[in-house]
Length: 190
Image 1 (spheres, one colour):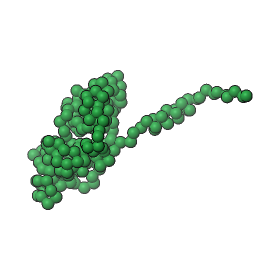
Image 2 (cartoon, one colour):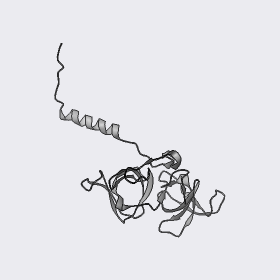
Image 3 (tube, one colour):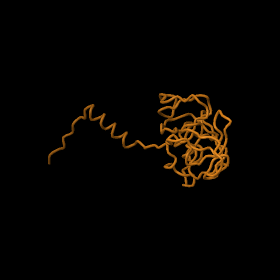
Image 4 (tube, helix red, strand yellow):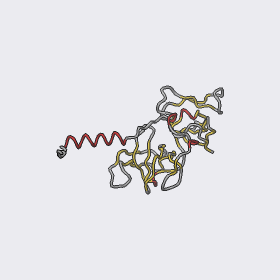
């Protein structure tokens, strides 16, 4: 019986295998909450905190580095310089949280940089400004029109509408939850 011939793989083969492994392990991300899990979908619990995964948080500090791995030993992937940026936590490891921003960029941040205070942005996928209403309901008075990526403080959500305040502005009102990145569809926040 002939013996199989084993050959040493060259550097090109190794690189090809690495790319194939990355493609297999890559999880597609989406910035559109219409495709995100709903709060009622029975989310998993974080292995460090026991809190639901995924969940939304915000940047507590005036600046923070998103790293490519869960340690200070890993390089910074992105630097955020504005307090209140919303993130979605997708995993936990020790004191590190894997987070995703509204553009779908994901990486790791130390838990000390994150706050449970809910913030959001007007959906980055929206092409036209959205109406900020005085009261919940499409027929209520429109107090402002907000462009995509405008920062918001979330005060409460009833499952369809969220009471919000525009970050750094006096404008307050109600937005459809479907036009906000930073809350799940039908999520209730008191």
